Image 1 (cartoon, rainbow, N blue to C red):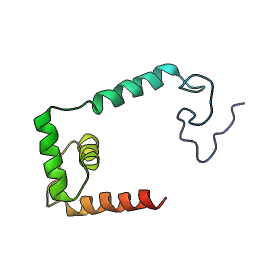
Image 2 (image 1 turned 90 degrees about the horizontal axis):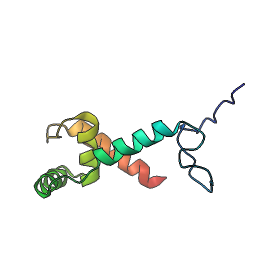
Image 3 (image 1 turned 30 degrees about the vertical axis):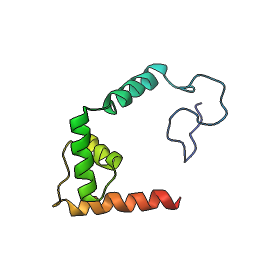
Amino acid sequence: MARRPKRTDNGGPPLDDYDGPPWGEGDAYIFLAWQAAHAKAWKAPSRDVMLMRLDKAERLGLTYEEYTLELLERGRHLQEEDDERITEIKAARKRRRSR
């Protein structure tokens, strides 16, 4: 019978002092596929695209990473009219800092 994961377990690879493979006891293919997808998604864009994103992020009061993550997750560029979503992102930033 398989053991139930802990409530705080996200199913990812172990993070602390672990001597086994980086994917833990799970499927290595899934780990490597996610690793490749992450690298492809966060591949550095051209200089002009990066500067455009940075400029838009600064005008909205976000970091480059927050703006880019929103673009990757939702597939759309944030505008000044998206003040509700921008407020949510800033609130999440404050929650991360307080932990």
